Length: 291
Image: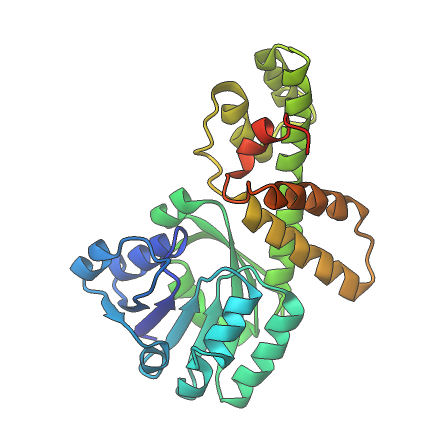
């Protein structure tokens, strides 16, 4: 697996790409709107392409790091036409956040082509992506996952193999509804406290030293105290999309989703107000203004 191709060199994908090429792999990427600046990658030896299918035809591994299920489907079997171009034996690695049922359906089409699909959803932030310290939530055939492991370790600190194809995306949706739901709850109670004039330093200190302490609070607290959202540069509209994916998955499985519905409704209200491009910690201020 010497030739690695990437579609999606955005906030997360750029770090993945940089680590792949600096750790000795041959990197190709699709030059498209939505990428972060890629001059540094080209300087390191990466080759830009303007046609996804032509690029896919020469690769051993095709990594997708796009927004969600519609984009993954479009890249593989829609306008991107990359599945038809893949050589037998190639591997597709989907690092996007996607609906597991779609992932499994696409995996069947990929297998019919004589290739394999592994879902390797990401957690953590662009900072860890640049540092090569992402968490990867992986689903796929065990043999294929082990074949990919040296490549994945180029940009991941922790690799959690959740099961067969689709289970990595399932675990990502579970992770995100818990983590982003917690962020939303903290933002909502912080908005309430600020509206009543509470000393927010005391509130944050109390939460840190009690049962509410954890990563979600660590990433929201700087905004509560200083309006600094740098520790969670994840947009409200992306979180709304992920909550919707979780609820679709839960519906398909016949699972309870009352709490997840509430999270999606809160995020959806902000998106409808035109606040979707704000980062998640900014809910602290946005929720002070009643919808």
